[in-house]
Image (spheres, helix red, strand yellow):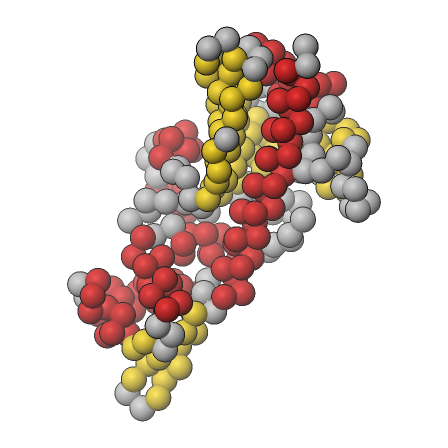
Length: 146
Length: 109
């Protein structure tokens, strides 16, 4: 019973339109302004936002460590949905998928972020609906709502 | 950030993706050293199926089995679990902070 795969899900209500949020999550110069887990700088962004396009962010943490997550854009639905794989360096296949879902809400936007672990190749092939169907079924394993 | 060998992570996550196996781990947390039949009994899982589940957990490094005479005692092995949790915690913290900053940016306009 493959009912749950661990994932991180965060829901935020943001007081800005879906169009504004979409710009912030898809344009490299805007992504430079918010990406990263602490107040350290974002050093470089590649965002070729189309299915199959490349995603890459380089950021430096306050402790000086630099990280460079990379991936490939999967679904690009302007102002509604953006997903890209999250490929660890040296891995032969992506291990996780990041998805932004945007929904209009009272003049603002509900942003749902899901960072889900992907099953390995064998499991993925056995799943008829592929990534999209899989993602739709990913429930919250660990996450918080704000 | 935590570094993993992806194939090891895959095994942990796919082992954790099953409700029966998560149930087994939870029981072992409170009752370490249960035998295979003791684990199977309340779940109404047949013994061969239970052994299959235990093989998956064992391959992922989540349990250890020790044989004494004819009884096999099963113990939780917390290391890989801790790594899986730190994977989740790490990304939770990345996205929580990034989304805070994203909100601050777009709400400023």
